[in-house]
Amino acid sequence: MGIYSEKVMDHFQNPRNMGELEDADAVGRVGNPVCGDVMDIYIKVRDNRIADIGFKTMGCAAAIATSSMVTELAKGKTLEEAEKISRNDVAEALEGLPPIKMHCSNLAADGLKDAIGKYRAKTEGRKIEDKPVECADCPIMEECQHDEG
Amino acid sequence: MKVYLDNATTTRTDERVVEEMKRFHSENYGAPTTEYGHSWGVASLEALEASKASVAAPLNTAPENVVFTSGGVESNNMAILGVARARGKDKGRIITTKIEHSSVLGALEYLAKEGFRVEYMGVDEKGFVRPDDLEAALSDDTILVTLAHANGEIGTVQPVDEIAKICDAAGIPLHLDARMSFLWEKLDLSRVHADLVSLTAHTIHGPKGVGALVKGKDIKLEPIMFGPGTEFNGRPGTLNLPGAAGMAKAVEIWDDGEVELARKRRDRLWAGIKEAIPDTALNGPETGRLANNLSCNFQHIEGESILLYLDMAGVAVSTGSACSSKNLKPSYVLSAIGIPPEASHGSIRFSLSKYNTDDQIDYALEKTIEVVKRLRKMSSMG
Image (cartoon, rainbow over all chains, first blue to last red; front, side):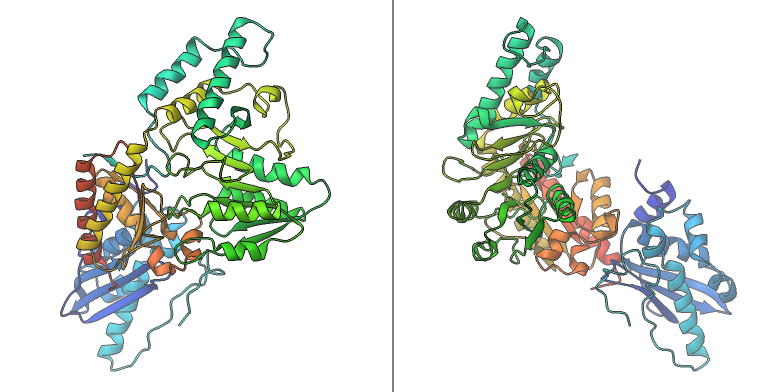
C-alpha cells in the first residue's frame, strides 16, 4: 500500500488532457523548479466557458494527478464556476492526498485561477505581471534556496 | 520482468545464508555465553568464534577484533559515542564530512549538544574528501576522525589509504563506516590503519539486523549499552548467533568476480542511458566509485514520478528527490557536491547485485528510456 489513493495513481498513470493547447487563449503557470513542481495550465474559452483545457507539469505523482484532475473538473464549466475550484476540491476529487503533498504539489487549482486571470486581463486589455511563486506556508521555506519573484 | 535495482538500500538474502541461519535457530540454539557450561552453549561459542574469523578474514584483521552488532547503525553509534564517552569530561573535536550517513551525523549532533566540537569537512564535486583538508582540520584536541569508506548515495570511494596515513601520523583514531563498501571494495586493515570499522550484513546478501564493529586493540570504547554477555562479543545481550552465522556465511560465499560483473553491467546501463537520454548527468565520480552504484540526474523531470513509473514497469530504484522524502528536503549528499535542487529533484540511484542479469539490465535501460521520455513529454520545463 503506497502513500497515494487509487484515484491519484489512476490520474498519475493515465493523465487526462495532458499536453499544451497550441491555440490556447491563456496559460497559467505556478510553482518553481527549485521546489520540484511547475505546472502550466492551458485554457481555451468559448462563450465564457472552458471549451478546452490542457496541462504540462514537472513534478511528483501528486503534482501530475492534481493537474490532471483540475482539467477534468474545469472542462465545460463557466469561468466563474471554474475559478471557484479550490485545492481542497481537487484533493477531495482525488480521494485525498498525503498531508505533506497538500501544499507543494497541490497547485493545480492556483494554476487554473492564474490562467483565468490572464484570460480576463487579455480580453479587458489589461496588462498583468507574472506574480511571484507563493511560498508562504511551505514547510521548507526557511531553507528553501529559491529566489522569490 | 521484475528487476530489483535498489541493492544499496538492502539486498536479497542468499539461500545458503538462510539455510545456515536455520541451523542456529532449530539445532544449534544454545547461547554462546560460557566456556564452562553445557555442550549447547559451548557449541555456540565455537560457532561464534568461527563466525568472527570469517568476517575478519577479508579485512586481514584478528577474529577477536570483531564485535557483532544489530547492524551498521549500531556499529556507527557504538564507535562514535564509545570513543567520545571514553574521553570522560575532556570534550574534544571530532572530524567528519558533510556527506555521512544519518547514523554518524545523528550521533555527532548529539555529542555536539554535550559540548563536543564537530567539524564537517566539505567534499569536492565528485564527493571526495581532500586529504589536505583533513590535514588542515586536525588539531591537538581532535579525538576522532569518522567518515564513510564509500558513500551509499553517490558511490564515491574515499582515498582511505591516504586518510589513514594522515590520521596515523597524527596519532588520531580513525573510524571508517564501511557499511556500503564491505567486500565491494578491498580493505586490508594490516595496511590501512583504521581503529574502528563498521560493517553490515544486509548489503552483501546477508541477513538484516546484523552487523559488526571491527575494533582495534589499542582503542578504548565506553559501552553504550549495559547488560550481561559482553565478555565473548564485546556487546551485551544474548547474541544473535543465527544472524552472526548468516553474516559469516555471506562473507564466505562472496565472490569477487561478481563485483566485476556488477561493474560491467553498471557501466553498460550508464552508457545506454547517456547515449539515449540527453540532459542527463552522473552524480559522483566516473572512477573511484562503488562497482554497483549508478546515481544520475534526469533534468526537467522529478524523481518520485520516475521511481513510481519504473516501479509500475517492475523496476525498483531509489531517488534523492525532495518530493519523495518525508521532510521535502533535497538530498544533503547531492547538495554537498553542488547539485542544484532543480537537478537533484530528478536524481535516481540504480544499485546492482549478483542477482541482476544482463537481460534485466537491458530491460531496466529500455524502461528508463521510456519513462524519462514520457515524463519529459508531460513536463512544463526544458
